[in-house]
Structure formats: C-alpha cells, structure tokens
Length: 143
Image (cartoon, rainbow, N blue to C red; front, side, top):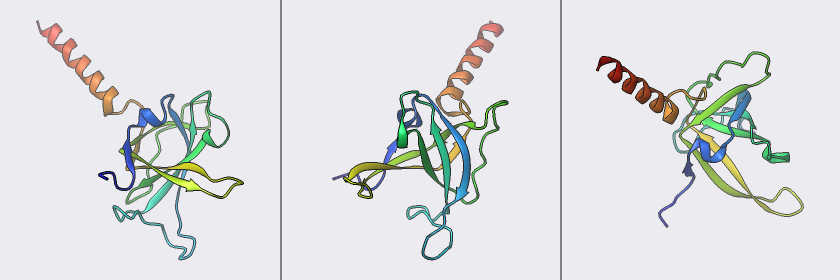
C-alpha cells in the first residue's frame, strides 16, 4: 500500500466553517518529562487548543487539539476585539486515524497535525486569489 503514516489533508476539509484557537502549549513526554518530539521531523511538538466553528459540531468534536511540529512555540494570530479566541488556519495539515479504546466501546479517532499556523486569509488560496484580483485590477488601470 502506498499510504504510510499520516494522510495529508487541506485545512478547509477538516474545518470547513473555520476554527478558533484558545491557546498553545508544549507537549511533554509523560515518562521523561522532556518535550515530546515529532518522529518524522525531529521538531518539538506543540498543542493548539481549537474550537471548530461548525455550528453542527457537538461534544468531543467541538473542541480538539492540533499538534504542530515547530522549533519554537507557534505564534497565534491576533485576537478579534470582543472575542476570547483567535480565528486560525493551519498549514500543511495531516490526519492520522487510530483506535481509541478508552471508552466502553472502541471507536475510530483522529490525530490532527500541522506544520504551521496563520491568520485566516494570509497567503494560501485566499491570498493568491486576492493577489490575482489586485494584479488584474492594476492591468485594467494601466490600459
């Protein structure tokens, strides 16, 4: 099978209604009490607490942690005035399915990972579309 490990996924596929960050903290290895390292990159792992903006999300699906592999603690986007959280997007996301057998019945769960964080609309598809719109407007003005 060609798929090994985590599956790459787009941010919009995981959070189609957007997401809000509550905070970020280092992930510590329970046994060694040292920072937990990403097995693929060797970088320290950080946990970003996220609220899914999907109005249909309930229970455990409403609040998740996204692990970010980064040399230093990711800087979260600025807060929106009047709100206790920050709109956020994740870069280079991946999802790893696993069996969670901590409850009464085993269930399939997902571990979310990313390589970076950004404010919504910064670069990515929205940024490219805005840049393209600006370039076409400039071309029309020049004509």
